[in-house]
Image 1: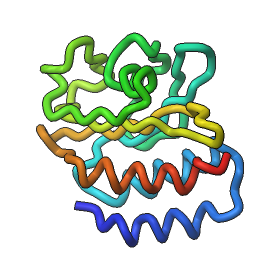
Image 2: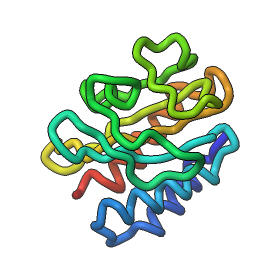
Image 3: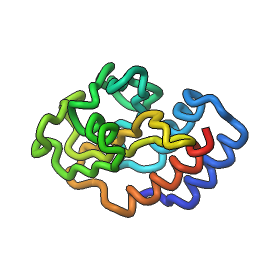
Image 4: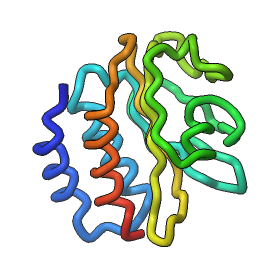
Length: 150
């Protein structure tokens, strides 16, 4: 389990003053991925067109390259702008199986200034029911701190 306070402080120090979204995503994906052994795939999908996400910086095996807002857990998070916590990906209607090892996932919207949807943060686990509301709250707070001013 992550020590989210230490992780948030490390990310804050590493990203201070940076305004490039891709650089911020790359740094955050790396720090998050290596902070917790539940995290099997950690990355961002960026909004690149209306209703369309494309893969951004990530850590782990290959991810899906393109995800429409209408499909999967990432699409649901982008479409609703609400965090999705999925205890069992097999039970999620329309789940996109980018990796056969994924058992559960959490996907959070990444919101910039003026309520602009930048993308989503997707964290997959090879364990069932790996995420809960405490993860969502801590990750959401970090995302708001890093991307909320952009």
